[in-house]
Length: 200
Image (cartoon, rainbow, N blue to C red):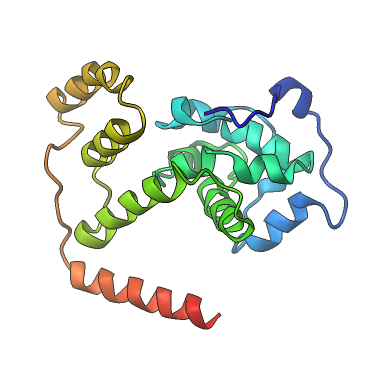
């Protein structure tokens, strides 16, 4: 998933916080609430916690260092935000309480507006995730992973079988999606959000 940009985390780890008008400030301003992104200490807990890290071209901490280094285009072309499954595990474990998942949503929105994303991956993966949320109220990991791997990583798909079997036998993964209670209420909320976005 390399985007052709060579990034060494040790080089970027010491990148200074951007000056006013920097890409860091742009991301901070675009993220609702206090994302605490400027508090990142490059510990790597986020990447070590992420179930999708192996598919990302940059770990979250590398991406945050790239933001500080004003590497705007490279960040917005990165596959990392698109592989975020919004499990919030990184956010919960972050010692600095950086709202990592919220930042990923911001970067996806910015990439869409700038038209700097991989069309073969980003919209497809994201739309599959959205379809499950709209239809069932939650993500369906087995369906999401299966559809994505069969469409984009067919050769690597067999290597996922042992992990999938292990998760299934330990009761960590369902073979069929489970719909939440009150799905109609969720759909109403999503419809209102779409209307508000269109107005704004």
